Length: 319
Image (cartoon, rainbow, N blue to C red; front, side):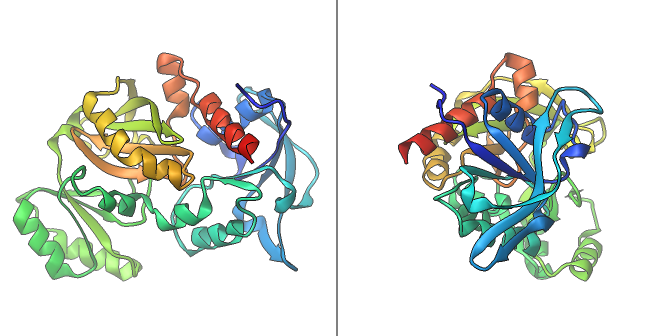
């Protein structure tokens, strides 16, 4: 049952004025909170600060409505002490860079007295492409390296691979290198010339042509899935690059994967998580700013935002 207590809720996210109200998960989560009577405040991460022992933010009270082009009213700019809030949502999109990491350190200072969702300590320590390494039996052959010789050896072993930035998002910088491709050295040169980060390589999974499934977990339990199908001639299925969301059911293998990872996510305060599954393999565990709940609600009526708030309210009531 939803809590009867009115919560003061802050959203740390990218500009809410610019979101697609028919697709954005943060908008849907905030909309559900408003429907429950909770009070909403919005700020962008560049207005998060530490001041004299307090974690503050400069932003706006907000009221939402589902009207395209007129979906938010923002109050005057004001500075708040985030320690006075009941819930703070960490929802800005990656890249998962030092700016992102710094925001998790600052929000650590108010959590858990203020419930930060997802838990910022574990968001920082569970990057989506690294947490999967804790579950080697669930993932395709994978290597993480900056060293070209290591990447070449991986490609020699597996022939057809996917190469991408370790901390990228939205399908940016994702390359398929098939057995006849000769571009690994050039791509390595390009990536290492613009970043000091390693690359991640995984064996190519032909099942991606049937879609890259996004499974939504709430407090460690699967609540549904959508399938993201790539455009013809495209390897990437991310909706940011034109992938089409279609209805899909959870399989026995999906549930097996969720049962294996769910307790870890729940214990570490990862309330809203989206995992990526291709065929029988887990490829990513998205904890920073997962998406997909609006598509899920349209396809099968599952109100994932409501389930998320049920979980949050249970945690608040338990305190």
